Length: 283
Length: 106
Image 1 (cartoon, rainbow over the protein chains, first blue to last red):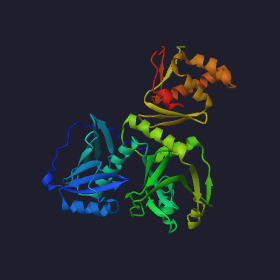
Image 2: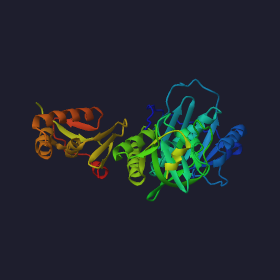
Image 3: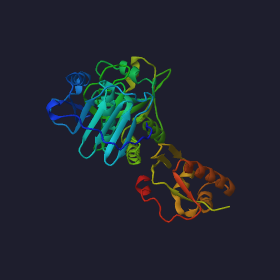
Image 4: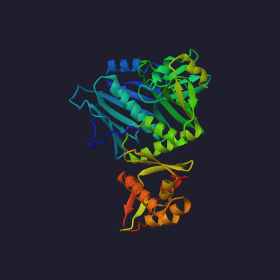
């Protein structure tokens, strides 16, 4: 689990957005609609292109994010993402990105340059915070649907997340090759597509299906599915869950979510040769 | 040598699975999987029972281990987990124990 360095700032962000100049797009990832408001037509067009498959036709949104574009500042380019919570507000800082999100009003303000990566980071973080309270999470993994069942393929960089996505047969629906979206629904888990792409540089399909298994990827000399102990499964699952907030209460929730997930979803080690035959054993 | 009293931090998440306790620090995400002996010490860490009594009365009774060996192992275990703030060590009994432990350690 990724935890960022702790930094604190109490100064509220100025609100620059006005109703008259506000342009909006609703981006619904994982079935959670987030309205992004901006005064810039160019930025709005970029959002519509980047999240094309995830733009909702419905005006309803559960959350609002107001984007205020600003010129580049001298932020520390090597600084990690910092996500801190204070007085009901989450503060997100990363380089010259500064965002604030108020839990009660479900509204946030983002100060960023006109680049797609900052809004992408804020969306990921907001979704991790929302999911943490619902028993779900974002996972470093590729995912796909085949025969009505969703499969996750997790591993460290280079383990084969993109490779297994490229090898997927034509009847498989790619949900993502980088960041999977997992939600709990009763006694099962659903995997949703995300626009968060890895090396494949292609957004996933905006579809979902009941999760059938999580495979922990390892490249090898032959294809095989191997058992893994429950404690190792949970430990490896936790390593790959995206979570940025330095908040003990939420860390506990994520731990509980990982344990619940492992009790309901089979987790195996998938040793594979990088060719299409690996998909013959994925069921 | 001063007696040690150990208690579980409230800034942890824990779950018992297949006889092994998984413990994660909620402050730095350090993750430990405890074996059966360590799990027994963990479960006995009520802040009121001296560590030496846990070793003599529980560990040496339930596991095939001699007292000196068990005490050395327990001391090392407590030192390591206390360095991560997962176990709290005191030379006095601690009357208030962590109430959040029970529901997480089924």
